Amino acid sequence: MDETDGRLAPVSYLFGESGAPARPSSVSPAIDDDEPGWNDAWGADIDDDGARLSDAETEQLSMKALSRRPLSRRELERTLRDRGVDDEAAIREADRLVRVGLLDDAALAQTLVASLQERKGLGRTAIAAELARRLLAPSAIEYALELIDTGDELARARDVARKRAAQLSSLDRDTAVRRLSGYLARRGYSGSTVRAAVEQALPQRAGQSKVRFR
Image 1 (cartoon, rainbow, N blue to C red):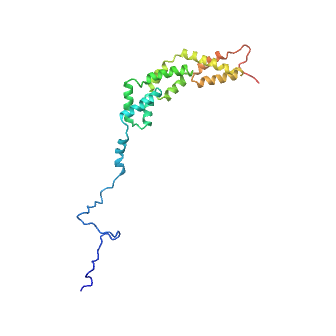
Image 2: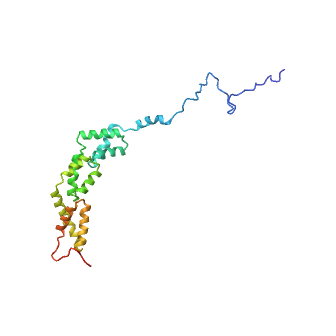
Image 3: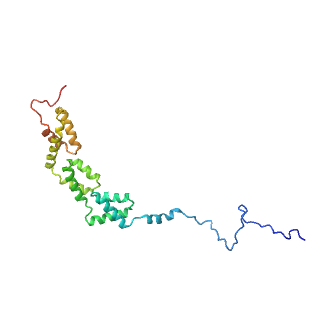
């Protein structure tokens, strides 16, 4: 009797390293070495689409922002982008608000000019800087600044200078003139307007020297 009788014949594995038997060829799919693996970037568009806000959600965000204070068009677009709205949707929402009159850079610029003049006593230069900071359209800024009357601005500067001069009464005139001039200049008044306002608020007294000697 053959010595191998009653025993299983040794099994030869195709993949000896793993020790596991190979699947039958009828079950195992053919492997194409040239086929690329999955790329995570392929799903990026799907993820982005799923994260996009709807038009209704975008509208809610814009109305909430406008309920806090008036905004320029560019301010609103920036606000929406900061809250996750994509550029195209932000522009589309801004267009809608312009059509219904809730965004109007020209009107906002004029309102700000009046407020900055009356409430803060600012001059033309400071007002222009504030309008630019609010991201208003350049054409709206230019038009609003053209409405500032030179005579009104001088009257306003004189009023501001008179009130400020009352706080400088303990100083000699030269020091008071320097400080008052700097104060008006920082508030955006031109050099000629500053000089006229200071001369009226701190008039030269008779016998008073223009230069203080020690």
